[in-house]
Length: 404
Image (cartoon, rainbow, N blue to C red; front, side, top):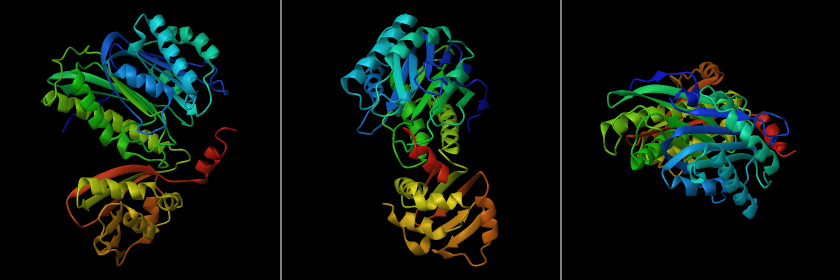
């Protein structure tokens, strides 16, 4: 088991990483809405993006830039997603990378860009042009929190995580920030997650580590079953730890990937816990599936069910809804083999209400801010889990007035 030492400071806990956040005027509220992460040292870079067929202009531009495998900056805005904005949107995204590159004295292709917010509205470029010099001046080794605040939309609190792990006999630091508490059920990314590390990692190895860590963390969360058009996860590795560069197949890369997964897992859980209108963070664990793929499918079906999620909100042990969600999943399910427990309290055995079940105990567990639903399909050895949250009236209120 990898030993993880958790650190304060988020992404700027990483040596050689600067960050900052300012209010450019994109958000009518006047809150911070423009963030920048910068590695003065050229860094190995890797990124993954939304698989939604509708992609924002920043996703298109960053996909191009990430192919080079080197980056020194990540520029992110909130309040306007720059999605469905046509050629103008792509032009604006390219201009933002060019201006940022000029200010930092790096090639524009070394700048990754991301945007989140309302779809179908052009960016207020006059305000952004005026704010970018201020943003660069705001960069500091303590600026991680400001950057985390500047990428928020409906988030109620910033999301940061950082740790130190031993990789190949040397200590390395991994830190990150994230946002996204609605339109959230990613496949290959989350709304935003930006990570940095001082580890030296070979190009192909970094991309491999990122994909694996994302699959085990951000691909295992859901708030509402929807998928953003702007999902972006990016990692910068500046190599200042001066370790022997990590290569595919090596023990060091496995250690690094475990550390990356630890940081991303903490950020992923923070996203779900802050889900729009959420009051509970619930882990849906499935075991006894025919395969791991079936376990994921069954857990995801339960985690995404509006009827299950409203029952979670009301602390209602309506196990029939869980059975329904299992049955509609593509996983193989045999009704008379299913067992369901809330925490350590059994609720269902062999597809029936367990004899002697303590429903008051189940309700007490469901009233907690965090708990686990354990489902055993009784068919094999496949295991997986999905992190989800409850569905409340507040979610409807937030999204019923999102553009008004």
